[in-house]
Length: 229
Image (cartoon, rainbow, N blue to C red; front, side, top):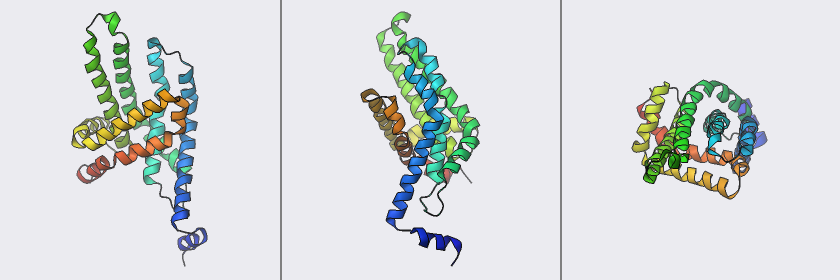
């Protein structure tokens, strides 16, 4: 009997063991999400709810992208095998490996959202018709949904940044189920924040990341089949 089989026999490979392993992975990933984002999110909570602070809000959200990317990669590739549980090492490795590519995607996403938010906040001062808020809001929603696609793509595949951006926009139409699912997930995140607080959203971060991964499975499958060797 080889070492792997022996370890499986020692720990068990039944449903209960795999469920416990899956819970362990989720808890470790949640812990690392908090460790990599809580310091800046704490600063976000302390900011006044004023339009002048929108650029600072974007700056506080900058570390969220790499953390979510590492979590996506870890949850995708870490299997609930009781004999080989190393989510902490997988998260750290994914964080370091994905950091440059994620920032090239996440940074412009936050920049676009900041521009849209600032324009929405200053519509009365700009003396433009109030209906301009509708196209601006639609642009903002499109940026968020394309950004979500881009975050999944850059976390799991190796493409040039411009190709990631093109694929992210392309799959808004190619996989409408993913787009609708992400929109509902975004609405749920906004709802949790509005009803409770940013802290509640942070504590449920791994659940939302797992949902983002599951919703994106059709897009991931198409990319693997049609855009990778």
